[in-house]
Image (cartoon, rainbow, N blue to C red; front, side, top):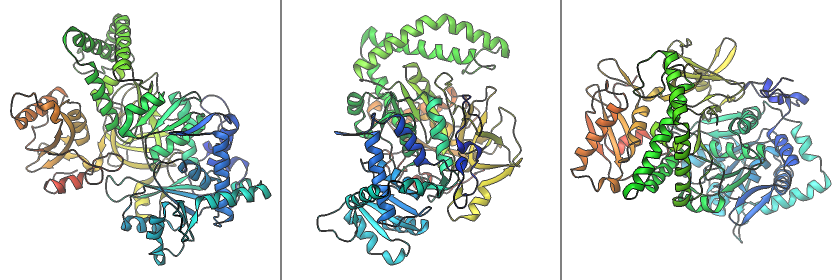
Length: 636
């Protein structure tokens, strides 16, 4: 057994790096699974509060008993065996986490899905993963599946969480739980024996990508893939059993599911809510940790800026405090850096830049501390309780928003990952430079590769490739995609992520965009749309933005303005927004880029389903179709 980063014994999965499922029973070192990790956490935090859904609360012990009964019911009543697929088609609700854990307890493979799938999406998914059991929320969904059951020859059972009184077409969840409790009384060792039939490298889940770059892909994840993040993230971000996590993320999505399992690993308390009622949940839950998508943090940022506005000298003093706090943190970044980390930094040598930053940081220390105290007290009074730890995932946060939140006292940590690689890197609480995605987690290797898969030096932009125990087993039943996405480099299996970025001299990685979105102009200069879009979203007048290629060798901008803020503008909105976009491009260091040759103002915000994925990412092709933007040109 290896040694972990903190000097103690390494968990059994550290020896494995996403290989093939281990056949048959596994030995002691290779058999560590998600269920065994859950049982260890329950033993440590038995009486502590685990989950809270409104007035419903459950301890870790009760959560374990509930999940164990459901697992035994799946085995005994539904005859679910190791490696068989169980689809969980439900939104966030009290039964979701016990059901997810139950599938792991039964040694089956969990397939979480969003509940609003169309018939075409639903049956494509069920047949594509060869599901043997489908767990659904209502009888209506069960009847939809039964009406076309001939297309699903492997599907044996449908379990309904909220059955109608007259429904007899499927099993009810309560009957599965009751059967499981009875069998555990007669056979208490059932789940332990089931766990011996699988191992760390066995499949644990099939999770579908969000479909940002095309049709959703089914990704096969092992127990070791998921256990890696559960083991390292709590210590890396400082999550403990005393934390209260507000979870509004959808549990069917990898980000939400991962945070729930990380909370279990740390013994923290999970409070479930929704993004639409954040103010209410912040006041009621008073969370210490809040993971969310970037647009949610942008909304919080706008709310905090509005709270600092008012009239007279007080508003000026608050905005001065924000500038002082922000400048102090920039100087601190510069002091820890060997190169200038701030825009318009003096043209000095590497060592003198660091010394200059350290001196400025020392001079600003006391004023900045006072400024942050004033900002925190003001925001607590005008906005309400705010979490001390924020986590950003699934997409990058605009640099200006990132810096402002940090200056206001938020400790926002941005991470990098995807369905195929879970989490590969994240910023640390004591090492949190804005605009970066942090350093790799232990056991993870990240490289920046060129066109010929050669390793690029630090500072050069290339494709991210990652290796380690967090890298998935592969794509479900897609040999062609597996062959192009995974490569062997120096004896290690790397995932080619399709993401572009670079690594600075301190080992901090910076994400710039997707390889498939990069554009080249007539001068051969490359533009990364995501970088420009993030800069535009820093503007208080722009809520959402899309950059698209435009002939001849230029680019266009589609913006969703903040109409409330545009009202006081003393000129025509289109002309004002054009000037604002050009100002942002120049102030953001993009003066070498040409001005946009095409300009569209959207009349309505982007909505989930047509312009946005359920995780609030842009559906670029769908937006182009709606706004009649020509097909792609000048794409790399």
